Each structure stands twice: as structure tokens, then as C-alpha cells.
Length: 308
Image (cartoon, rainbow, N blue to C red; front, side, top):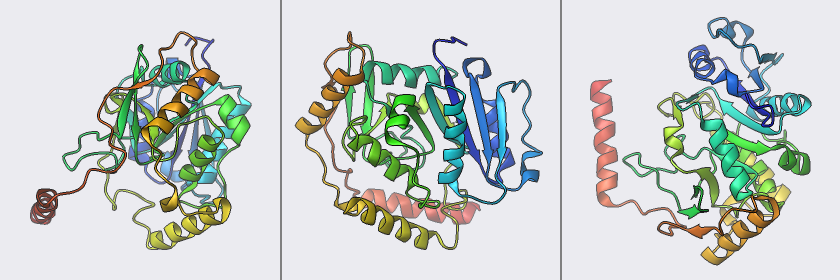
């Protein structure tokens, strides 16, 4: 790999050897200076997840289930200690489709100056009912475009070293819920990312990364019996820490978002980059679901129950 670009990846896995194996086998090992695998499940679950040619792989086994936030912090700490400049986190239900994915995110950060990016297309939140990407808008920088999305998804994330050194790591008081969102909120308040509800991703990221088909049963966190309590607790923690619940954070206007992007570009971005301009429809609020959307969802559930 290009030693001038020290790129590292942390993978978080918990008792899903098949997904872990697929994630590991999808990696372009020659483009990564270091890969850290944090296992938050039983050690025996890794026995089926061995991969060939993983010279840069470091495995960290948690003594007990620490939760996703603490596990991600372990990965980030190991990458920072190794001198990595461009840090990525990936959960075990994501896999690489295009080996250029890491370079694409690093280049987007270099041009735009945005120091933290999140893959937006994991799960249903940033998609239409038909599964099509549904960003709030796209932004043209000349050499490339980025998309801004209404929901922050933490299954694949990019951080610059400078960003993490300034803001710190995830708050470990959060457990399996809200830790990545609260961390991103601190990052954007420090001026490294555009306003809340406009979460940045590279354009056409669904062509770079794949995911297991998302469902409540597939997600080890969403399927927990105490999931509702974990969500409630994370909401309380966020409110106590920042003085308001997530739902009360106001939606910035178009002018405010563009001013933020230009300020970030001027502070951190490539000097040759073009002035950012919106390049698509401006949809700061989610598309309203109509009667056909609801009927289609009902038909899908009926078909799933029949075919299952």
C-alpha cells in the first residue's frame, strides 16, 4: 500500500462467525496498514472465521461482553497507537464490494475537509420503501460529490486522526445504543462535520459496500428483549449530556448547511477544491409515506409469512 496514506480498519464482531468471515475475506489487505478485529462474543465463535493472508490482522478478545461502543473504542485505540492517520470502523454485517472504498472515503475527506463520514445505506432509514438511496441532498465539489442524509448509521464509519485527537472516543456510558450518534454529535459541534440531520457520505456508497439484509432478527442488538430500555436509557444520557433529546435538535436551513460546508472546506479541505454547491433536490425532511407505501409494506409482510 501507499505508505503516505496510513489507512487502518477496526472490525467489531459478536458471535456471528459467518458474517465475520465474509467481512474479513472481502478486505483489500494490500491497501490497509493495519486491521484490528475486536471480538465481543465468545472466543470459540472466531474458530470459523479464519482468513488467509491476513498479515496485518490483530485480534482483540474481550473478556466479557462490553457492548459495541467499548469494543469500537478498543479498535480505535489500537489503530491510533499504531500511528494510523485514516481510521475506519466496520461492523460484521458489512462487506467490501469495491477495493477502492477506503481510498474513496479518504479522498472525499481530503477534498471536502469533512473529517468524519458514515456509510448511509445500511438498513432502511436512508432509503425509499423500494430500497433506493434517499439523501437530503447531494453536494458538488467539482472533483467529486458527497451526499447528506437524515439518519446517522454507524455500521461503517471514517474518522481522521486529527478529529479523534480533538474530540476523543465514544462515551462508554452508552451501551449498545446511541454511542455512535452521540460521538458524531460531538464531532460536528467541534466543526469537523456539517450540521445534525445532514450526515455525510460518499456518493454511490452502495456500490462500494454491501450489507447483510437487515432485519430485527438479524441484528443482535435490535433483537434483544431489553432493546426498548436500552434506547430509553441512551435518550436519557444524551439529554443529560447535551441539554436536549435528539428529537429536539433543530434542522438547519440550506444556507446554514452550505456555510458550514464551506467553513469546513476552508479549514481542512484541499485548496484546489471547488466551492461546494448543492447538486440535487433539497429534502431536509423525510419523504412522507403515502397510502401505496403502507399497502406495499403490508403485502410484503403477508408474502413473507406465506413464503417463510
